[in-house]
Amino acid sequence: MTHPAYGVLRPVTPIASVLLENNPSAMTLEGTNSWVLRAPGSASHVVVDPGYEDPDHLRALAGVAPVSLILLTHHHADHAEGAPWLAERVDAPVRAFDPSLCLGAEPLVGGEVVSAAGLELEVLHTPGHTEDSVTLRIRQDGTELALTGDTVLGRGTTILSDLGDYLRSLRTLIELPAGTLGLPGHGPELPDLRATAREYLAHREQRLDQVRAALAELGADATPRQVVELVYADVDKALWVPAEYSVRAQLDYLRETG
Image 1 (cartoon, rainbow, N blue to C red):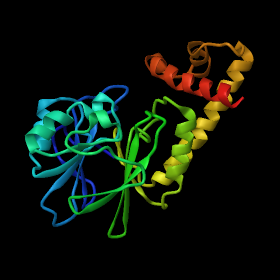
Image 2: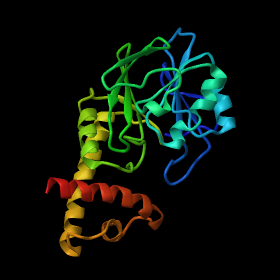
Image 3: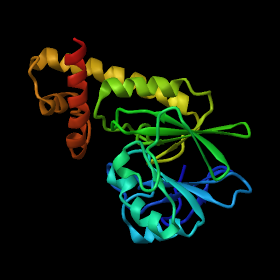
């Protein structure tokens, strides 16, 4: 699915539109997806992940005012840094799982339902990319949506901090109904988030097998870099540094689980 020009609010469903930030990179793909949500007929909006403190992007987001709430899927700067700037301009509170990111409101809690802009957003705590990662699930008029932040991307795989947590989070997403539309923090929409989560889980299990094989060849004390050079030999070397984070999480997981 083709992204629009930067700064153009693109409707995706009757309740969700996306504004793409001009911060493309190997890590952010085309850029950060800032999501603007509201039920039909609602006068206010919810903004999810306003991105970096990028005045042009944030001014475009502020243009959808009134905004009743700003939500963050996790603490990384490409999702959360601009939240205080936007909150001040639109006079809206900020909520996140990490209390240090909140402004004028309480932290998000896994399992709670947030009511705003005519919507009910269920908070799923889905750690693994970061400890504070959440997925926001919306059921509206027979439509199922889930905003995944970086837990599931629109293309490619995400960097991990804790593999055990991440595998559990994928299993949580696999329990969503078939056809749930995934709205990721980077990349295009996912027509069936449950199917994508299954693919992610299979990919992680395959990588674990490759890391096990690498350890058998290199020795149990192999460093993440040594494993990356063997397992990711066919991957662009520009991605080897972020790959080390995921390999470190895999090695920790294997050593903890035996």
